[in-house]
Image (cartoon, rainbow, N blue to C red):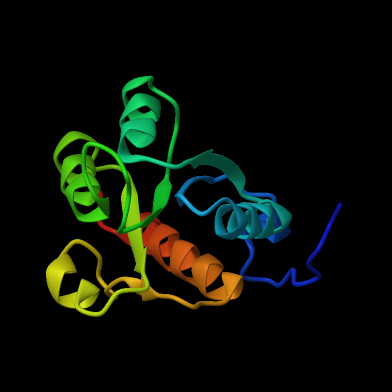
Length: 144
């Protein structure tokens, strides 16, 4: 069932692009479902997880992931900051967007994400905007 009506020229599905895969990592099932559904409605392929261990399993399996959208507070072997460092070291081809509802998250994030963590509460459209921004940066970056 489609819950959102929001397609625009900036959405990936509107230009028949190769599907972008976003891995949504959020322990709160309701938040995760809203974001995952919204991203799917915008044309993204979405995988879901609740822990850093879920992400590491997916990334080491060889699945194509373009962007990880992760909560900072994760109940697993590492938090979202540790996960972002791990992804940067092991899969530099994958971008990470951090989100948090805690004070001080932006300071702890350092250079892990260009625009700092997305602060809760946020609107799902902001998640799509951030994903599109990262994809555009990758697309226009000089090839090395």
